[in-house]
Structures are given as C-alpha cells and as structure tokens.
Length: 202
Ligand code: FER
Image (tube, rainbow, N blue to C red; front, top):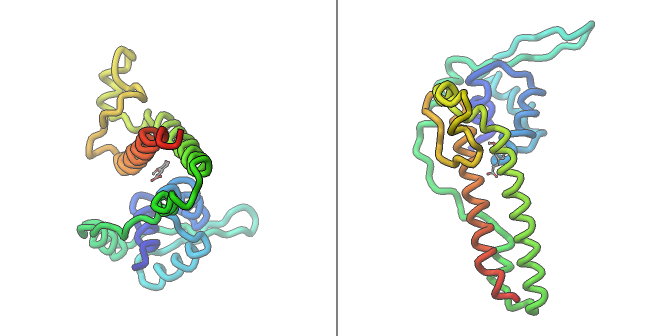
C-alpha cells in the first residue's frame, strides 16, 4: 500500500503546502514516527496530481522562481477518509535488533553483556529525555483553550508534569499529542524494563 500517499493527503487536509513544506514536515515531525524516503515525495505528488486527488497552483517567487502550492481535491478528501476510518490490523512484529541480541545473550561474556545492556539503557534514556523535552515544548498547544482560560492566573494545571490528557477531541493538536504521548509511554516502559534487569549483569 502507498502509505506515503495518505500521509501527504493527511497533511494537505488542513492546509495548502509546497513540495518543500511537505518534505520539511516529513523531516521534522512525521518522520519521527513514520519514516519515508524523501526522494519518494515528489514522484508521489506527481502521481496524486495525475489521479486527481490533489491539485496545484503555481506561485511566483521573486523574479523567476516558481513553486507549486498543492491542495487536496474532494476526491482526495474522500480517499483519505476511506483510509483513515478503516480499522487497522496490528503491524508485523517490530524488528528490534537489540532484542535479538538479548535472545542470544549467552554468546557474550558477563562483561560484554553488561556493556551492551548499559549502552542500550543510556541510549533509551537519552531518547526518553528528548521526547520529554519535545512534550514540554508543545505543552502550550496541547492545553485546551478552555483550560488556558481557567488557569490563566497560573494557580494550577498546565504543568508539563501533568501527564493527564488535557485535550478535547476538538483540539487540532490532539493527533500530535496522541502520537507523542504514545512514544513517551513506549520509551518510559523500555527504560523501566532495562533498569529492572540491569542488575543481572552486575
Ligand atoms: C514529535 C516528536 C517525537 C512527534 C513524534 C515523536 C508526532 C516520536 C515518535 C516516536 O518515537 O514514536 O513531535 O510528533
């Protein structure tokens, strides 16, 4: 399935973007949880135009530079909704090469096993810290307008440490919040598991 097709339609669902904007979105945001080959984006845009799912207008930039600004068509919106509303089967088992090494842990000496395990713990902690930082940066947009009004005096709520979902379905950042909070939960659980077992190697 051309999942990239839906990722592009999803981006264009809310607003107009240039090919460059779409590539940036993949680098900065979507690419954090959905890897795509950036070289595939322009061919995919061309295909979507041919299929009538998106269209573009040419915008003049400066003296002679032109850029294509893409928008979704009604057909594109329909295809996106047909895809997004479909129940999603579980993905194939995730390939975590570290876990394969764990399965074969007895190929290593105790010291080698400890080094491998501790290195993984360090990397997972760093990743968790990055995600936590991202979450705190985004906290202001994750808080509903209603909550902002209620707590504008700063007496309670709106702390990044409030890990309860402050969002309503109507919040346009709900999707981002869901993806990011899932990543946080996953990394926290990975770190917890590593910390619980590191003593096996001491
Ligand atoms: C983000 C930063 C990180 C984000 C997602 C991630 C959607 C990570 C996701 C993952 O590791 O699964 O802003 O936004």
